[in-house]
Amino acid sequence: MNPLAKSTRLGDLVALVQGQLERGNPDTAILRLATLESADGASLAFLTSGGYRRQAGITRAAAVVSSVELSEAVPEHVALVTVRDAYRAYGALARHFSLLANLAAVPSIHPTAIIDPSATLGADVAIGPHVSVAADVQIGAGAMIGAGCTLDHAVRIGAQARLYPRVTVGAQCDIGARSLIHSGTVVGSDGFGFARHEQRWEKIPQLGSVRIGDDVEIGANCAIDRGALDDTVIGDGCKLDNLIQVAHNVRIGEHTAIAACVGIAGSARIGRRCMIGGAAGILGHLEICDDVTISAMSLVTRSITQPGFYSGIFPLMDNSEWERAAVLVRHLPELRARLRRLESRLKES
Image (cartoon, rainbow, N blue to C red; front, side, top):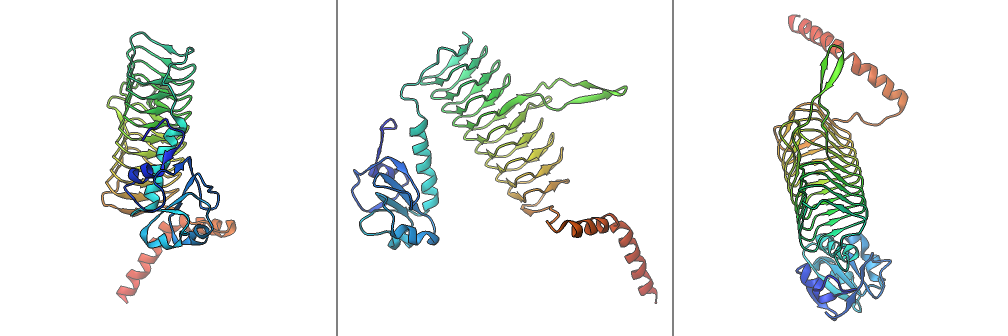
């Protein structure tokens, strides 16, 4: 399969997803992925659930990827590819076509980029306009650094990593292989470290760095603070949405997914394969074990030691009803004491 071709053979795409071409010509040229409704004769579409049977019956796609169970919904004149998991196949093919769309025809270094002579660049590196690469930076083979990025002293970028425009990576931070960081994110900003002395704050220098593993994706406008002494660590395969704050010394285990607007306070430790819902808050110095799911908007105020699904949300309701409920919450300790006194009297009588 030639990644620089304008189209990809259907047979090559079938091999990529380890599927079975039930009917159709393997030499059919596929230019794009599309929905069942919008597909044309150069498109590959997907039937991922029974709710799309009607759209499958009228699709104009060149080929459709489907599970065996749903394959009868695909018209006979349309090429059919069967797979065990159509949605997973969609993900693999989307990554392939994304590579085609973003791959530079010839890896190059833009003339406006400023690169220190001591920096080391691997083969086939692409560096965009107005990039700043400081001393002792190492950039792995096939990495792509977008316009306006800043790589400070002794940064290491892994092979085939991609930094979108205007990403900043602070001194001595590591970005793993094949990781993807979207625009506006800052890796290695100072952690929030201050000591109070005589009614004022004194800054504590942050001497650690940030280590981001392989195959990590970080969304736009995130802040990953460097550690105070030890490093802030994001494990292999983690997926972070937009607008996430990761404070100093936080450690996030492998393959954890975190939705937008989550705030993680300093020195919190999150296990492997966790899922954190949007706008959740995690207090500092807590530990969350592996395989924990936390609902959106929850506030985690204590460590979690058992895998499971946790929520800490006050349900939405009419405002006047909420005000009455809030008053009750405020008086819960008093109501609890009164209930205990009543129980005690009942036992005595």
